[in-house]
Structures are given as structure tokens and as C-alpha cells.
Image (cartoon, rainbow, N blue to C red; front, side):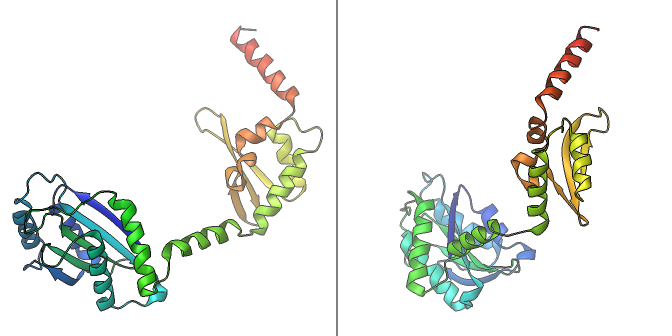
Length: 261
């Protein structure tokens, strides 16, 4: 489960956000509130908020996301949301908040909107609320035996970096070996050498200036930007690997043009 919390200076924006039509919202639980419509909820929040005008950010907004594997029910989601609020310092006797489920995304999640200002005028602390939200979410994962969404994301990231794409691997190996060949002093020559090995190299140029700015490599009907293969296969890196002689000649020609030779 992932928990993220923000605070705000007013309730209008956050309440209306949670009831946008496309979110197909469902109120799962409401505490200290009578209305179930945005305008009514805002008025009720603001009425209690006025009991302590010194609190600059009275609006509390938490989102809780769950893994598909948990097959979590609405009742269980509402229960967990209430436990989260207890950990944050909110109580049913003294605080207004509601839990709303959104049905617009590929993952199961709900939002909690609360008033930090209680019926007694005192405010729930917002000290280190961002880091504490992560901590409370982890505690509830263990308490309810939930899947760790963050750990799953880390695993996916590792698996993605290990993904083996034959075309890309062949291109990287072929380009690297070709660059080691003697006599290649320009990108055009590199292109000719690669074509002999079944790789098409396209040198990209600006339409107006004709200045080179990038390279593409094509093989088996698939095209990849040089930077997609790695930093050393991007245009600037490839150019830097060309024969030093070419660079010297280029500089001499450039100086000659600048001096009117």
C-alpha cells in the first residue's frame, strides 16, 4: 500500500477534485459531516475551520493505493482509511473527514479529505506529515497483510533494466566493434561500414541550417535513436570517437573561413 499526503489552504479545490465526474466517485465513509455533495461539504469544512483562523493549511488530503493482488473490498478500504486517520491523530469525536473511492484508474485507490481543525478548535499536527504517511502506510501493510506496492515497483524497475532486446544488443556490439576499425574519420564513413554489416545509420540534420544533431540506427525494420542505445552511441559521443585528424582538419577549415581565406 502507498500513502501520500498533502495539506492545503482551502477545501474547495480538493473537494471538487475528488468528485470530478470522470472519477466515478463513491463515498465509503463520512465522519462529522452531513452533506454528500461538494458544495455542502465545503461549507461544513469552512464553518469549523473558522474556529481557528490561525491555521494556514487546514485541508488534509491523503491518497491510499492498493495492489490488485489484495482484492480489497470497499468496507475493508474504508476501515484501513479510518485506521490511517487514527495514526495521523484524527478522531471520530473531534474531526471532520470523508473517504472516497475513485474508479477511474487501473489501480485500486481511495482519497481521504479531512479538516485539521477539530470541533474544539484545536488542530491536528502536520509535522513531518509526508514521511509519516509513508511510515503509517507500511505499518498498515503489516497489520492487514497487504502487498507492498513500493516493493513491487522496485522489482519491476530491476526487471526492466535487465530486459534483453536482441536488436539493441546487436547494434551496440556492432557499432562498438566498427568504431575500433582503422580509417573511419567521419560519420559518413561509419555509416558505410555499418551498412556492410546490415545496419542502416541515418545522420539527422536540421532542415534550415543543415547542421547535424543526431543519429538513428535501423535494423530488421526497427529504428533506434543513438541515445536509446546508450550515451556512447549518441551523436556527440560518436563524433568524439572519430579520427583526431578529422577534427584538426575541421578546425583549420573553420579558421580559414573566419579569416576570409
